[in-house]
Image (cartoon, rainbow, N blue to C red):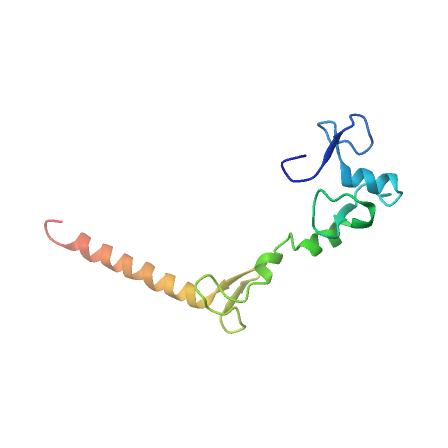
Length: 133
């Protein structure tokens, strides 16, 4: 078994073999059953158990569909309704930057951080002006 939790079989030279000579068993099962025709497609474990490679547990999907299924691209953050400080990600409190369309920032946290940064700068300016400092 690979460190990722998937079962790998030593089959160097096989069409599905990775550069190290191993073939992920779930891909082999789908390939031999005739389900995996386009080798760029992904094989999904329906029950989420990576070492359950029974044919009835496997489903071939495009990479895009598989990625959306698992929320691999920004999905975990997309589901968050509040920032780490507990402020809501709502229309009034969420800042979006046009150059980064998938990013969002909490306006309340940004205001607080700006206030702290300005206060530190003021304190640094006043301590450097003291005589003998």
